[in-house]
Image 1 (spheres, rainbow, N blue to C red):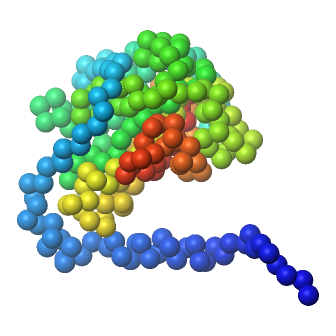
Image 2 (cartoon, rainbow, N blue to C red; image 1 turned 90 degrees about the horizontal axis):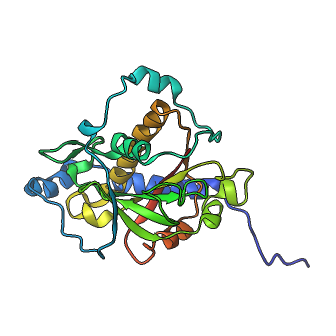
Length: 261
């Protein structure tokens, strides 16, 4: 009698039930709203983190020169493409890309170019350089990852990188046919549920993904304006990215990754 020791089959229907279960149990209702209503003045909780070296400050959006590019032109150019053809970005080009994608467009109220649930901004933004960009300008003067502080516009040195490992972070490049050799950097969007869970409860995870989508569209339209290509990626290895960014022992989770070049 033959005995099966291993079964590597996965039933798609069984996996689907996981997100259906979450969706049904995180619906916004009058009952959950009654919990939130007394918290209309809810403010960003104090999140203490290790102070890191400031590498650069991204200008306010209003201080970036307007080149007259229209929204229609950006929409016409928006493509998902691995044809990373641009020469290395200058510091001025890179800060322009960051200011448009997720910068501050209101100095008085510190408002961003994208919306966030309750204006709490749980999504954090990390930049990982490729071999093409690392050490090629003042912002990326070395082989390190940066965190963009969406409240202060500061680019903070997050962790030491290793450009040779960039292709191991994503399934399409690690075990697939693609490579980031000609891309310039990855943008990793992570969600920190601690920022908003006291206000939004189970709705928190949905809102973090919504915010990633808002940021992602800004990034892709800005890329079209600047003659850059982007690839939005879902098939990433979260454990490897969290280790690279030194956020493994935190509540932060990698939600979305973009390649830009």
